[in-house]
Length: 274
Image (cartoon, rainbow, N blue to C red; front, side):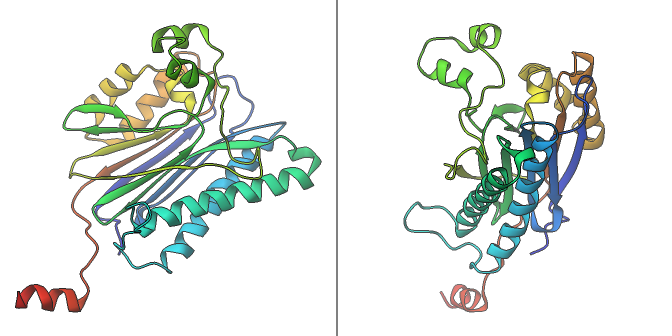
């Protein structure tokens, strides 16, 4: 099913004000309803190698995996669509490839990357992530962070040692507790949610949310939401105006209309009969 007319996608990335090169990688495939954002880390240029491997591997593996599953099929083990298992497995494959490359290539030792992925299918979206890149959703004016950071700051908050406000001021930033390529195995957080027409999803590297607080991100999306290109440009401008300490990458994906999986002929016949 081609989702190009169902999902509007805008993809932008900027090196920022202090970094010599961009270690983020973004990829959008409107026809497949797939968006991927990775924020690399490591030695000189190794971060961009890791993020590029992540984005390309996940894209290829998902497209290949979707050909092997029946659209809309539910897995009995976890209640998720088969498409979600495809996304998880693709990220695990990317982890293996990055880890293997880091072991073989001296210049790539210690490299890793975060990743966030949205796959739109069957009037829902699969959301998967590893690390502290984020996915937000705007629905009926409500702004919600739908991923949970895999970071030291988040662990301190979860343990009750800091409030979110105190952690942002006092805890070390950019220390992730999970990333692709660091270990031979990785745990991927995967969730699904039903979508509604008008839903807007924001995928971003921490170059955005470290520089622009959630309230300002929401206000910007509310003001420029009618023009996603302008909204993305304005968010990047604000991140750079506030210091631009890191690369800033943004993907905006808006649900325009339903994209339920087409019914098989037998199912349509049964509905007509009963």
